[in-house]
Image (tube, rainbow, N blue to C red; front, side):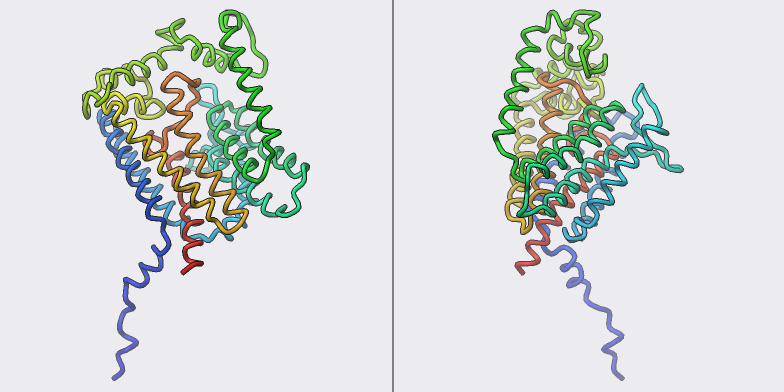
Length: 386
């Protein structure tokens, strides 16, 4: 009797094909950041309901998303660019018309039993769309193509800023700008913008006493956004109100010293002086307990992740994959830089989480999706070479 057909197929070759091509250095950086995030969340949120358990669940979900997206070839991701962008715009318009308003912001949309934040979709859809656009224009780029790319970018940024959600708008804008820059935007256009921004910051610093007086209205900015900038310039003017977040964050960071106060020993954290200690301001809690040594380790992990992502982008075989991988990688830099900057008092408080450290379900899944895209690009190249 022939029993050849009754024998089960070996499990290892199948698993080997599934995991083949995964970028181990990128995975290592992610595991280090995830471990640090779990430690920080346990300390900051162990007495904060189910924050730690929920954070671990969100992180596990992000890993599942990463694994699934990594199996998708970049060619299929390219075909999803336009539908995902259009769906994201449609959801943003629906949010403006029928969205849920909380604390004066209309950022959420109810889809049956689910409540989603559509702006999170654009963090990935935006670089996908622009990378697709420049791939289509490869070899025939004109100035008009950059203008169209700018319009594609400004539409979702304007819709998100109107919610208002300045932090997410900044992240979407940054992701799109990275794609446009990598596509070949001339430095002659970039440098004047940077010079103008530097001049604007200098003007704010020099004129803060007059422009931050009560009753002075700024164009284009809402009143609460104006207060955030004025609080950044001098948080001591309202130490128990608008400036409380920044002052307590800086105190916590400074009190950590070289080695920190120790795990679960942070006084500013556990005596409830740090607001939003599990979300936007978790970096302050982390710095207090682990000090400069812990902060340098965290910065080292982020730096390694970013450099590895840029290496993957540089080695990518097509314009689409290079632009997409580069933009996604630098988006992680934007996340980390803006969060650490606002907690340290060098940037306004805009509500940007620290990747893999801060609590947040939608943001964590978006991060997993971004890393899955990076892994897909790296994996496709390695499988092509094998």
